[in-house]
Image 1 (cartoon, helix red, strand yellow):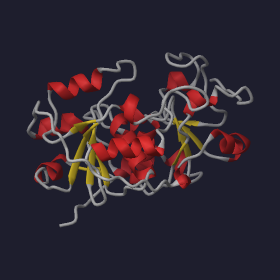
Image 2 (image 1 turned 180 degrees about the horizontal axis):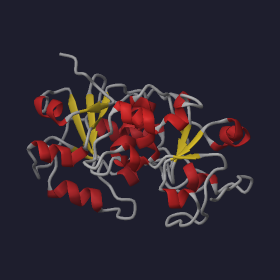
Image 3 (image 1 turned 120 degrees about the vertical axis):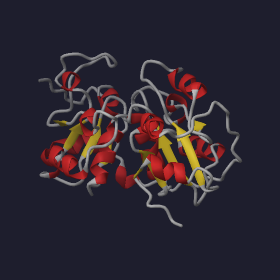
Amino acid sequence: MQPQFGPLIEPEWLHDHLADPRLVILDCRWRLQQPDYGDDAFRAGHIPGAVFIDLHRQLAGPPGPPGGRHPLPSQAAFSEVMAQAGVREGSWVVAYDDDGAGAARCWWLLTFFGHSQVAVLNGGFAAWERRGGPVTTAVTRPTPGAFTPRPNPAITIDFETLWPNYEAMTLVDARAPERYRGEVEPMDRVAGHIPGAINQPYQQLLAEDGRFKSPVELQQLLEPVLSRTDRPVVYCGSGVSACVDILGLTLIGAQPILYPGSWSGWIEHPVAPIARG
């Protein structure tokens, strides 16, 4: 039976399909300033059959200008990571985390590289535990797959394309309001935002239990963006939490575009303007 797949699936669906050989589960838990957090969390307990994916090392390329702190991984590197995790043509990939952002980044990358059968576990690991789903410390050694990348450049934009055209585009900044306004900047050397961007913090798309808000709530929340276009350019600090906004927009029928370099990449260009307030 073909699953009602993506981009969100519920814990009940995952529980019912745990034994399906087509299923690949990716544990994408992470913390921005705690590089070992995800691996430690995985070792302490994870969904049976899950494979740990290190966002910092496997869902991003080497940091640095002009790509920002989490540039896109190379096609070859990402393909190898997915193949070693057991992903192949026809795999049903489910990504989960405990903050909303890591799994969304994995979902976006798989979508970008042409694997359509990918979904985020709604509510993440906490929702799985609340449902009473099994948890294990056993490490799965998947049979390597054969991942064939088919990049879709239509859902991403680089600085060279964005900079001459940004004033005519609808930009969405997924960071916290105080970072958007330039009042604080804990990660990057310059504070502020891209001029004209709409601030839509990614956390606002999630309910208190970590699940995505309903389509009606998302539609209302994102109306300032959708009233302008259904193809906004979304960014954050380094292209990770922006994927939560992208997933939320996708859930209500929009076709958002990721600027992977995001703020940390934008500020590496002397010609790039900066706004505050």
